[in-house]
Amino acid sequence: MGAPTAKEFDNSLRRVFLLFQQMAEETLEAIENGDYSNLMGLHDIDINLDKFHDYCVRVLNKIGCQNGKKTHLLFATLYILEMAGDEFKNIGIHLVNDISESKFENIKKMVVSIKEQIENYYDLFYRFDKEKVKRISELDQKIYQEVPTMYKKANEDEKEIFHHLRMIGKYINSLMELRIEMEY
Image 1 (cartoon, rainbow, N blue to C red):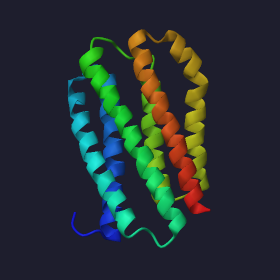
Image 2: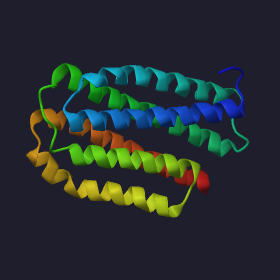
Image 3: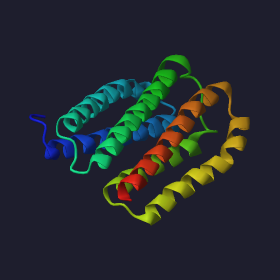
Image 4: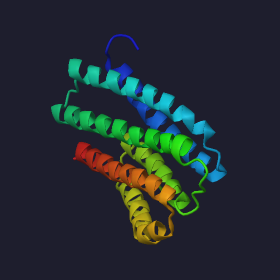
């Protein structure tokens, strides 16, 4: 990353998205396999996400976008992506240090849904389509309807992770709203 340019901004923003997706994939894989030792690397991924985030913010501060409204929306998007990455990092910390003996069968479906929402959002961000918005909303609505049942069945360790996943879900909805705002 050299001088702040629009091309470097685009590459760095895409990198933020890819790191965010990687965090979701590794979290799902660890929960499915019951092996949480690989999640120690989430902290490093989060550090890289933060670096690319910081670079994007510097570029926006320095050169911005031609459309001032879009600049503000990109700032907000980056901020929320960074916060959602922190939630994955916190999940990793809990699974590795605090609750590594538990099985997470009651929230696996939620992790799958969050991962799919993230993948759909990434696609939506670069190729806006109302059908993609509907798909993300349907995924969120479907899992939201199952939340009370999942939460009742969940053990205390699952409830800890459940909280972080719900926060990520809320962040994805906020990101989607920002993307819709960019379009109109």
